[in-house]
Image (cartoon, rainbow over all chains, first blue to last red; front, side):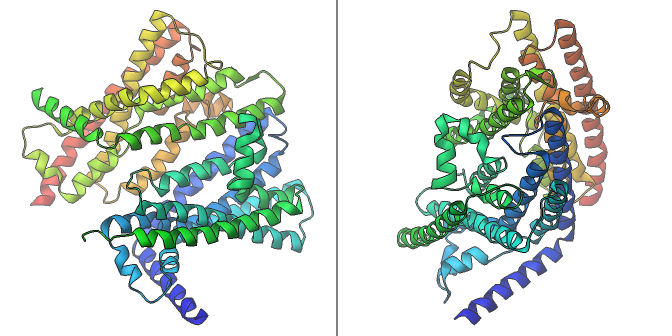
Length: 267
Length: 267
């Protein structure tokens, strides 16, 4: 079974690469636009830290590391899952989901891994470079086990985001709407970008609690970054990974339920 | 004039189809503002001073709220994409055959979109502004109010001219969408949407505040914020006028030149 899924995955990635190669200009422009965004972000950070020594306890280097981590997590999600989640509501509306369901493999697997957006992967080295510059700037020793934990938590962050967005995308079986996956993604990203501590002051900390413990969107970038450049509590690591797995199982359950309601387009 | 009135009325009806979605989307639009406000709270706390970039914390919050209003006037979602798509796909022919001015047609369309937006967004905006009332300055004097309205209308025209001009690039380039992405990113920064331009270092700020983008968002927002004295407000409006005239003329020239090319393509 495993070998078969491995081969499907390899084929998906190859096809996506071929598709990407057809539109090389697209790749180039994406890279330029992302680099521009990074420059703007760095200017903004410079501006912020020219007025204050720290933001919610994060120094400039630590904040920079958070920005780099956030880029890693979001670009990995965008590369592997965003386009796939985004397409689901379209497939439901047009009834093209049928063509996925008739195939002899897990439908959730086929839907989730169909395409890779390689141009988003271009941000991975940029995010990594920012992380390295920040870590060197701060001068904290970076050990191998810290790096491994960091990578594990980046994976955990992607898992949390995937489960959340996939579940949301699947609900389009019940709700026809315009406000789609791209909206949710935009807001999730704009929440997760900042130090989690800044949310403690809002609504008596209720929002912070919900976004850290219930749906740990704030943790997807904050936690991996904290592990390397700040202190962290081991229980949080366990918590995020457990919640990530629970959310994944939930997304699978919701998907199965949704399929029972799915009635194609024309019948 | 009456034909543009029809365009206007059809666009109105079209916009009313997705009402519920609209309300949700409008409220969601304030989420990034909440995070921005919380970020600035942390910055002011860390800086341990009352003014950053010449703005007190209350004014900083108001700045971001008023930016929403300026953007509501100045933003032209999909205008450039629509125009360049018409050029590329040959859909432009449909309009050329009709006794209608293509740019005036789009302007009528946009006025309708904006009016519907203002009517429907009034309630959500009122709620958010009421919730944030302790940050806002008091009601402006009559003349400031009048000048604000003028500045906002000019921001609308400026946004239309800038995006129209970019749409015209479709005559010369096949793929405007990717360029547009880069442009939108730059505009987010240059217009003062990301943060008040007064925070920029002196020399950079001087260049940026001469560009039309600052007159689309930054300066109208400062007028709403009651940060400018009457002389400055009049100067801003005059510069806005100059930019509108220059860019509208450029759009017209691009249109007539491009049309010659376009006709040549059709054979």
